[in-house]
Amino acid sequence: MAVFETADLTAASYSTATFGLVATSVLLLLGTGWVSRSWKLPVALCALAALVGVGAMFEAREAWAQGKVVPVVYHYVGWAISMPMQVLALYFMALRRGKLGIGLFWRLVIVSTLMVFVRYLGEAGFMHATLAFLIGLVFWLYILGELFFGKMDEVIRNTSNEHVRRGYFWLRLIVTVGWAIYPLGNFITSFAGYVDDGALSVAYNTADFLNRMAFGLAVLASAMLESGEARNARD
Image 1 (cartoon, rainbow, N blue to C red):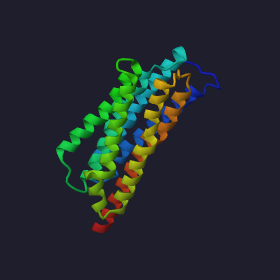
Image 2: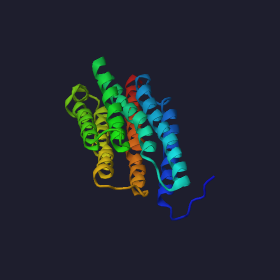
Image 3: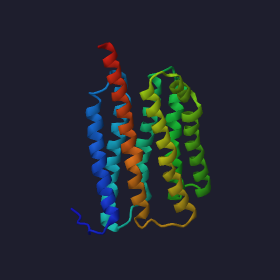
Image 4: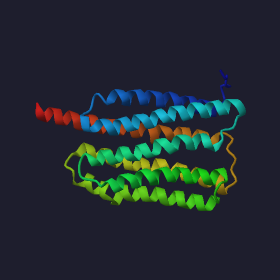
């Protein structure tokens, strides 16, 4: 097992994010038993996204221990799985409150996956960096457009449940503000000539507390509040 120095902030950020994601995963998996049946899938998707993050963090931490550098692929492998799962958690959350087309489902799956994959191609040198950055940005903006102005937003606005509307507001804010670090990091490495000496990894790992952990906990909180309200109404 690698032994890190006390002042190794990058290693500390990987370890802290790993433990945080493990705790979040366990809590969310337990949480599937605390919520109503229709909420189990969104909560489980968030749990899987956090579990994927655990594996990605562990591998990246080992890479850092070996050579004090983390190749870009270690970041993108985890994002390529967890980000589509989180987008689908929002989809199924909205689906509970109204009708959504299967076409929207597949568009969200494809766009969220390509958003990550295209950025990876640009950073890895398989695609022109500027083109990859712009395409990835367009895909992210498309997701935001669906969340703010699309059918999902319409369904949530028309629901009478305050817990769902408030939860959707915070989740949408995370996708808007929290996910902005990914195109920003892509821009810095692709156009500013930045070579990651660990600082960017620290930023990504810190962002995971919002983008993976807080995201999942917000879904769980909304699910528990609505499920509890429904049980009280039946009683």
